[in-house]
Length: 288
Length: 301
Image (cartoon, rainbow over all chains, first blue to last red; front, side, top):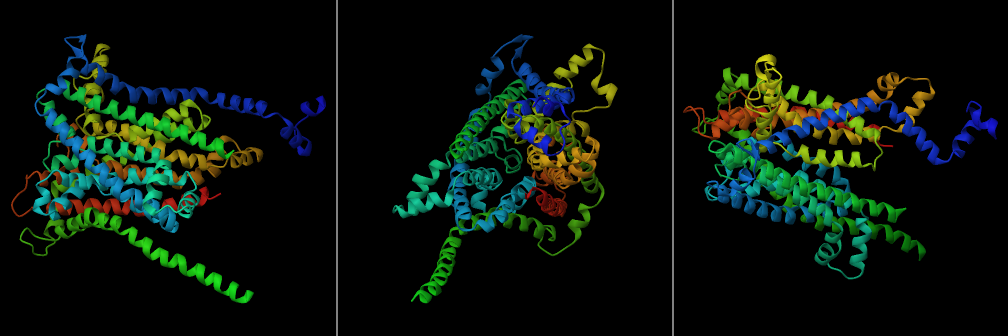
């Protein structure tokens, strides 16, 4: 027995030893081999962290410093700036309208593709990526060219286009959600119990898609609240457009507003990522 | 009797999905109509407009102007900038993805980096420009720190946040995470047994990457780089907020046409410029799709 372990582990005997080694020991030897390259990887990750965190720190310091001292004044001053309220309300309305249209359009489409046209899935993957490929600046040129005068007079034209810009994120989120459970079985079960299509969608599919819908919604809202190109070229002062205008009169509040917008979005995104991970974890355990 | 049943069953099964398919196809109509109206029609209108004079006659004049003097320069700068801002983050993102890939899939570090990448990759535009202005702008924090140790960031290095080098530095902020997100699945697709096989045959780490890992990953890495190119090429907000139009970039030049800075008779040159962008992006995407197909070969295990 002892001789087996010390002998060069070759041939059948070696394989047998390898197979008999308790998994814990094997894991530890793997960990040691990871340790060898650790220094490079620690350097890579540290430099990355500095590059990504330093601008956040600098912006935070700039936004929260008055006369060399820490102060919340910059942050508190945001709401008092000219035009902030109008810009924020407009962006908020656009986000709401965009999200509603996007959900009404994308949820039934994604379910239908997965249920009835699985061989179109690749095609839809590509099609929904198109908006990423077409530059927003090109799209808005075309939109302003063809949109009827009536639509051009309202900011909701932007919402209609934001649905297109958000399509890749919304579809991808829903796609991931629909792949994570056995769609066909669940739908067949609901249908055979007498559920109509609408009640199946509402009572059976949506609860299962909750985290997918949620992440799609958050990405959509984040996109609308941050979109600058189309809004500025369509001459509407949304929140990001306001940030740029406002910079000329008070750069501190503009930096503070940028930072605040980011942190809120990130917080929500991170919570959703953690939430999604948890759900996936639970699903795996049930399978095992 | 039994012959009738076995005969009839397949026919019934064949007919039902076909009928259902027709009805279900109708369900895809709203989506198709929406994409057509709000994506395809505007895109086509741009291309058609590029071939029209302001009075509506067919002409090649716009396209001709779009390839001359400052517009030609705009394309050149845009392409040059996008190449740097895609190759550099592709390399850096790959290194980071490799570091992350070594951590166990469920580790905190890995989940943190993947979540953060998703967050940072979607982050561009105006706020990003402001973040960097407060870091390495004329009076930025890092600029100040460096000048405290008698290092003039702007004078000593030729760096300029409000110029090309600045735009590249800022683009890295969303390009690197995008690379990490795109390439991590490809790294995961590398079967560990290939590495073991290479090791068992006496191959070194270098041999493995040269003959096994490298060729298998190459289509994915190239494809991801093209994706980054497209992303840098079409970015508008960050560059505009940062440079306020001081460097000639095609998207900013197109924007200027919408803002009404147009010579009479040249109203449609903006559309010609936009058509040029579509052509370049289109070419990039065709190569991307071909590479994806190659890459898919390796992930089909």
